[in-house]
Image (cartoon, rainbow, N blue to C red; front, side, top):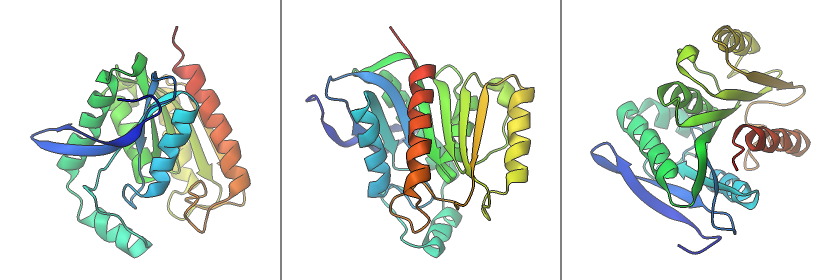
Amino acid sequence: MEKGSDRMVTFEAGDRTGSGYLAIPERGHGRGVLVLHAWWGLKPFFKTVCDRLAAQGFVALAPDLYQGRTAATIEEAQALLEQRDFELMQATATGALAYLRGHRTTRGAAAGALGFSMGGSWAIFLASLAPEDIAAAVIFYGSESVNFSAARAAYLGHYAEEDEWEPLDGIRQMEADMRDAGRDVTIHVYPDVKHWFFEADRPEYNREVAEVAWRRTLDFLNQQLAYD
């Protein structure tokens, strides 16, 4: 492994083999962040998120939850979601987390999870499934109903004010459930943007809002994943 390298890697995913994109900072080590793609699959944008995290000193791994399949349109993405193998996706996500936590470049007592839409749901789910492994969860326009009392993570959420895919009523209920469980949670709601506003390869992308959300994300990860 060379410093600054970024590559596709493989890892155990139950009784199968999973793959993902790994980005390592130039200094050769850092705190771990699991990047969980949206329903489009592991498109180049999500690899770019790993690269950007590595540039900020994090070891970032984006598992391919769809085993190489990607979608270019909403209709294609809906079809992929309908055809998904949930057990294999879970095995891939948990296998990637274990790989990241055990990687020789990863530092810190726990990792972060950063997810987009469907991937945000996975970030929430994993935080409760593996509470000792995830200390921080960043959610871009995603939601999930889980046992938040089982988690130990702090949560940061980025949402659009008018979102046909994630209505704010549901987000506020999730936020209340997180708080009732004693979790540290911060939810940002951005006006005049739509679902997928952070994704630079989508027509909904809003550069100004995305930059604000990115700065908040880095501040949050740096605070929650601090280590000596």
